[in-house]
Amino acid sequence: MVKKIWKQLPLPLAAIFLLGMVAMPVSVLADEDETFTATVRRYSYQIPDQTVIGSASWLKIKKGDTLLDIARRHALGFNEVELLYPKMEAFIPPVGTRIMVPTIWVLPPSQHQQIIINVPELRLYFFDKSKGSVQTYPIGIGDEGWETPLGSFSIVEKRPNPTWYIPASLQEKYGMAVMPPGPENPLGEFMMKFSAGAYGVHGTAQPWGVGRLVSHGCIRCYPEHIRILYPQVAVGTKLEIIYEPVKFGKLNGQIYVEAHPDVYKKIPDYVQYARQKLAQSPYANQVDAGRLSAALKLQNGMPTNITQLPGGESALKMVEVVQ
Image 1 (cartoon, rainbow, N blue to C red):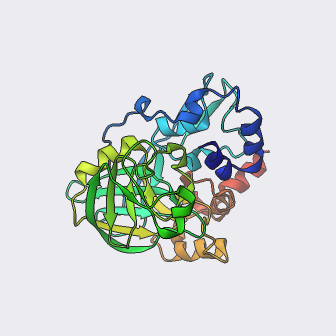
Image 2 (cartoon, one colour):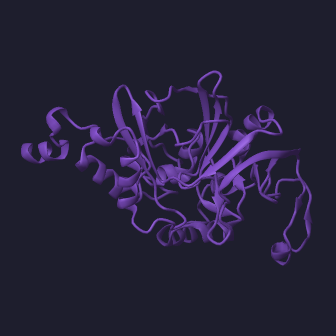
């Protein structure tokens, strides 16, 4: 497992990880999922006036915390914390530092039918249109070369305690063709296969991979989240997998943008792409260009208020004048 974590870490973190392995708390390596629990949380939405859900909160980092722990406790993927605090050490964040927990999201652009997965966001949305509510969960997605497929699918099979039938290309790596259920099985406790071949939405034996590009195309959920989703999702449930790094939404009359990195490098000109999306939205004449540009530059995944001020003045220009 240490080798697999090393592969996914940025170089500075990887060096720190290797140097500090002996003294690192066991919980960092063990990913003891029995210490993490979750309950169903439904967010209300209303198209087109309320398409931003949740709210951000603040906390102080405690001794022994890692950013992975903090992300998981708040139903976030590691990417959602890392994007906000890219210079903060993941395994040894400064104790006592006050940080924002970004539990706020712009709904993805879709028909909001049932399950929507937004690949660049590394997040799943489970809609109940009849009640105007949505649940949302972080995910891990396919690594480069093993990209998660895009398109419209449906859930075709559900399996508890799944056996993993290992693809021929990976059998030498794992030393077997079939892996039985158990703590080392990367499918975790539950598997929901969808109509795209061998792909599925499933749990994981490596929770640190949620919020990362780690799988061979499948969708990985925290163990506590797949336990919630599995009994709710019926065979035949519609699943839409989209690629939308820039989302626009509305809350209390204000316009928001949520910008994520182009994880699969699909977009030649990110800013032009975002501006085209804005032009196609109903918000094109209500946005402050300066605020939008700042959010697109950061790409930190945090919904940002980009509403134009009365009279068309730019909030950024007003700050410059005050300074």
